Image (tube, rainbow, N blue to C red; front, side, top):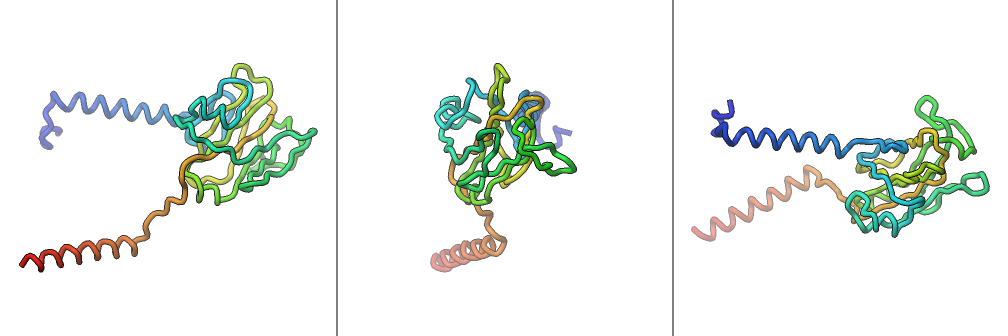
Length: 203
Protein backbone atom coordinates (compact mmCIF):
# COMPACT_ATOMS: atom_id res chain seq x y z
CA UNK A 1 0.00 0.00 0.00
CA UNK A 2 2.84 2.39 0.82
CA UNK A 3 4.41 1.80 -2.60
CA UNK A 4 1.20 3.13 -4.21
CA UNK A 5 2.03 6.51 -2.67
CA UNK A 6 5.64 6.39 -3.85
CA UNK A 7 7.11 5.47 -0.45
CA UNK A 8 9.73 2.74 -0.60
CA UNK A 9 9.71 0.02 2.08
CA UNK A 10 13.23 1.02 3.20
CA UNK A 11 11.90 4.53 3.96
CA UNK A 12 8.49 3.44 5.24
CA UNK A 13 9.81 1.41 8.20
CA UNK A 14 11.66 4.33 9.85
CA UNK A 15 8.64 6.61 9.23
CA UNK A 16 6.30 4.14 10.91
CA UNK A 17 8.68 3.79 13.87
CA UNK A 18 8.85 7.59 14.21
CA UNK A 19 5.06 7.78 14.17
CA UNK A 20 4.79 5.17 16.92
CA UNK A 21 7.37 6.99 19.04
CA UNK A 22 5.55 10.32 18.65
CA UNK A 23 2.22 8.71 19.47
CA UNK A 24 3.67 7.08 22.55
CA UNK A 25 5.30 10.31 23.69
CA UNK A 26 2.08 12.29 23.37
CA UNK A 27 0.30 9.73 25.52
CA UNK A 28 3.00 9.89 28.17
CA UNK A 29 3.21 13.69 28.14
CA UNK A 30 -0.48 14.04 28.95
CA UNK A 31 -0.42 11.47 31.74
CA UNK A 32 -2.22 12.86 34.79
CA UNK A 33 -2.64 12.84 37.69
CA UNK A 34 0.64 13.14 39.58
CA UNK A 35 1.10 10.80 42.53
CA UNK A 36 -0.09 13.50 44.95
CA UNK A 37 -3.57 13.93 43.41
CA UNK A 38 -5.34 15.47 40.46
CA UNK A 39 -6.93 18.63 39.13
CA UNK A 40 -9.72 18.27 36.58
CA UNK A 41 -9.30 20.23 33.36
CA UNK A 42 -5.51 19.84 33.37
CA UNK A 43 -3.44 18.34 30.57
CA UNK A 44 -0.06 18.01 32.32
CA UNK A 45 1.20 17.63 35.86
CA UNK A 46 4.64 18.26 37.35
CA UNK A 47 5.82 17.63 40.91
CA UNK A 48 7.80 20.37 42.58
CA UNK A 49 11.06 20.07 44.51
CA UNK A 50 11.03 21.44 48.05
CA UNK A 51 8.31 21.91 50.63
CA UNK A 52 6.61 25.02 49.23
CA UNK A 53 5.91 26.92 46.03
CA UNK A 54 6.38 30.55 45.04
CA UNK A 55 6.76 32.50 41.80
CA UNK A 56 10.55 32.29 41.93
CA UNK A 57 10.51 28.57 42.79
CA UNK A 58 8.22 27.47 39.96
CA UNK A 59 10.29 29.55 37.54
CA UNK A 60 13.61 28.22 38.85
CA UNK A 61 12.24 24.70 38.39
CA UNK A 62 11.02 25.49 34.84
CA UNK A 63 7.50 24.20 35.33
CA UNK A 64 6.34 22.79 32.00
CA UNK A 65 9.55 24.18 30.44
CA UNK A 66 8.68 27.83 31.21
CA UNK A 67 10.45 30.27 33.50
CA UNK A 68 8.13 33.28 33.18
CA UNK A 69 5.22 32.27 35.44
CA UNK A 70 3.41 35.13 37.19
CA UNK A 71 1.73 34.76 40.59
CA UNK A 72 -1.97 35.64 40.38
CA UNK A 73 -3.52 34.61 43.68
CA UNK A 74 -3.30 32.15 46.54
CA UNK A 75 -6.02 30.43 48.54
CA UNK A 76 -4.62 29.52 51.92
CA UNK A 77 -5.50 28.28 55.39
CA UNK A 78 -6.33 31.11 57.78
CA UNK A 79 -6.96 30.12 61.39
CA UNK A 80 -8.77 26.93 60.37
CA UNK A 81 -10.96 28.87 57.96
CA UNK A 82 -10.70 29.60 54.26
CA UNK A 83 -11.05 33.07 52.77
CA UNK A 84 -12.36 33.93 49.33
CA UNK A 85 -9.96 34.80 46.56
CA UNK A 86 -9.40 38.38 45.48
CA UNK A 87 -7.70 39.21 42.20
CA UNK A 88 -8.77 37.23 39.14
CA UNK A 89 -11.76 35.79 41.02
CA UNK A 90 -9.69 32.91 42.39
CA UNK A 91 -12.04 30.82 44.54
CA UNK A 92 -11.51 27.50 46.30
CA UNK A 93 -14.13 25.56 48.22
CA UNK A 94 -12.82 22.52 50.07
CA UNK A 95 -15.29 19.73 50.60
CA UNK A 96 -16.33 16.31 49.42
CA UNK A 97 -17.50 16.08 45.82
CA UNK A 98 -21.08 14.83 45.71
CA UNK A 99 -23.05 14.42 42.46
CA UNK A 100 -20.58 16.55 40.52
CA UNK A 101 -20.55 19.42 43.02
CA UNK A 102 -18.73 20.32 46.22
CA UNK A 103 -20.64 19.73 49.42
CA UNK A 104 -20.49 22.69 51.80
CA UNK A 105 -17.59 22.39 54.22
CA UNK A 106 -15.28 24.73 56.13
CA UNK A 107 -12.84 21.98 56.98
CA UNK A 108 -9.46 22.31 55.27
CA UNK A 109 -8.73 18.73 56.30
CA UNK A 110 -10.87 17.76 53.32
CA UNK A 111 -8.59 16.29 50.65
CA UNK A 112 -10.76 17.49 47.75
CA UNK A 113 -12.91 20.38 46.65
CA UNK A 114 -13.80 22.87 43.89
CA UNK A 115 -11.87 25.72 42.30
CA UNK A 116 -12.70 28.49 39.81
CA UNK A 117 -11.44 31.82 38.44
CA UNK A 118 -12.59 34.61 36.11
CA UNK A 119 -12.56 34.16 32.34
CA UNK A 120 -10.49 37.37 32.19
CA UNK A 121 -7.43 35.27 33.07
CA UNK A 122 -7.53 33.69 29.60
CA UNK A 123 -7.91 37.15 28.03
CA UNK A 124 -4.61 38.19 29.56
CA UNK A 125 -2.52 35.02 29.58
CA UNK A 126 -1.70 32.10 27.31
CA UNK A 127 -1.08 29.38 29.92
CA UNK A 128 -2.59 28.88 33.37
CA UNK A 129 -1.31 26.60 36.14
CA UNK A 130 -2.76 25.57 39.49
CA UNK A 131 -0.31 24.50 42.18
CA UNK A 132 -1.73 22.29 44.92
CA UNK A 133 0.26 22.29 48.18
CA UNK A 134 -0.42 19.54 50.69
CA UNK A 135 0.80 18.92 54.20
CA UNK A 136 3.35 16.22 54.99
CA UNK A 137 3.66 14.38 51.70
CA UNK A 138 7.41 13.73 51.59
CA UNK A 139 9.12 13.83 49.13
CA UNK A 140 6.48 15.72 47.08
CA UNK A 141 4.83 18.63 48.88
CA UNK A 142 3.36 20.46 45.90
CA UNK A 143 2.39 19.74 42.30
CA UNK A 144 1.61 22.01 39.36
CA UNK A 145 -1.25 21.29 36.97
CA UNK A 146 -1.25 22.93 33.52
CA UNK A 147 -4.84 23.70 32.53
CA UNK A 148 -6.32 23.14 29.11
CA UNK A 149 -7.15 26.31 27.15
CA UNK A 150 -10.35 28.01 28.31
CA UNK A 151 -10.95 25.91 31.45
CA UNK A 152 -12.06 28.13 34.37
CA UNK A 153 -13.43 25.70 36.97
CA UNK A 154 -13.08 22.16 38.20
CA UNK A 155 -12.24 19.85 41.09
CA UNK A 156 -9.06 18.94 42.96
CA UNK A 157 -8.15 15.88 44.98
CA UNK A 158 -5.03 15.18 47.04
CA UNK A 159 -5.81 11.59 47.93
CA UNK A 160 -5.49 11.25 51.69
CA UNK A 161 -3.39 14.38 52.28
CA UNK A 162 -4.63 17.57 53.94
CA UNK A 163 -4.71 20.69 51.76
CA UNK A 164 -2.42 23.57 52.67
CA UNK A 165 -3.17 25.94 49.78
CA UNK A 166 -3.90 26.27 46.07
CA UNK A 167 -2.03 28.89 44.03
CA UNK A 168 -2.96 30.30 40.64
CA UNK A 169 -0.14 31.12 38.19
CA UNK A 170 -0.20 32.24 34.54
CA UNK A 171 2.19 33.18 31.75
CA UNK A 172 2.34 34.46 28.16
CA UNK A 173 0.08 36.80 26.22
CA UNK A 174 -3.58 35.84 26.03
CA UNK A 175 -6.62 36.89 24.01
CA UNK A 176 -5.99 34.56 21.07
CA UNK A 177 -9.13 35.07 18.98
CA UNK A 178 -9.96 32.68 16.15
CA UNK A 179 -10.81 34.66 12.98
CA UNK A 180 -14.50 34.50 12.13
CA UNK A 181 -15.55 33.02 8.75
CA UNK A 182 -16.63 36.46 7.49
CA UNK A 183 -13.23 37.92 8.36
CA UNK A 184 -11.48 35.09 6.52
CA UNK A 185 -13.75 35.57 3.50
CA UNK A 186 -12.99 39.32 3.39
CA UNK A 187 -9.26 38.62 3.66
CA UNK A 188 -9.49 36.10 0.83
CA UNK A 189 -11.45 38.50 -1.36
CA UNK A 190 -8.91 41.23 -0.71
CA UNK A 191 -5.99 39.01 -1.69
CA UNK A 192 -7.84 37.87 -4.81
CA UNK A 193 -8.55 41.47 -5.76
CA UNK A 194 -4.90 42.44 -5.33
CA UNK A 195 -3.86 39.52 -7.49
CA UNK A 196 -6.26 40.48 -10.29
CA UNK A 197 -5.18 44.13 -10.09
CA UNK A 198 -1.51 43.22 -10.46
CA UNK A 199 -2.32 40.91 -13.37
CA UNK A 200 -4.24 43.66 -15.22
CA UNK A 201 -1.38 46.12 -14.72
CA UNK A 202 1.03 43.66 -16.36
CA UNK A 203 -1.27 43.35 -19.40
